[in-house]
Image: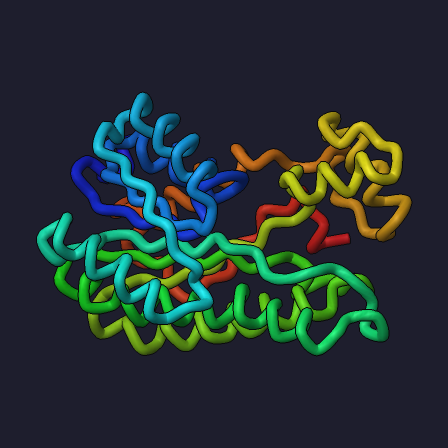
Length: 265
């Protein structure tokens, strides 16, 4: 399907790996110009090399800590100069904070979860808004989590931050409707991210096998999906790419689960 992304300008925050990179690949495959924003230069270099061969020959990787509003302002100012003041797509795919029980999490870990998962998105949207408003069409897609709907006792800070992000996204969809800027949220379920695969290996499970990974999730957390396996990062990309595209012309303020059915168990 042609998503109408040819010559679109897309910024993917947290696009150096995992679900963010999978999304960037889908956008590049459809002809979008891609800028990836992340903290790790090695991740950015690997990702931009990948994207260069996938339909985005001028892909660029920009280093920024999204918790720092000044760094974020500088990055989007650079993109404004590069792209004549226009941005069509903003994807926020940064994941917040550490796992741990309520009793074990420190104040610093709570603050980190909200700085990564909430304030990072706030900084990026605020800095990008002038560019998004200048574009002929614009979309924002923010990554939340299905744990906001099905709680886990080892993810209270992460889940609280994602719930706040979801609420702010809903508010933004109302605020920006008059500009016809569509704002949506995706909520991944048990996706085989690097952190989840790493956790599985730490408990003696082959996390690279999505079926074994889901078995481990069921054993340790008790809420597997209807599907018998974990999802893959590449299965997130097409969903986000559609929400970010011109093909999505009327959906805004939505929260889309990509979770193998766990929201319905």
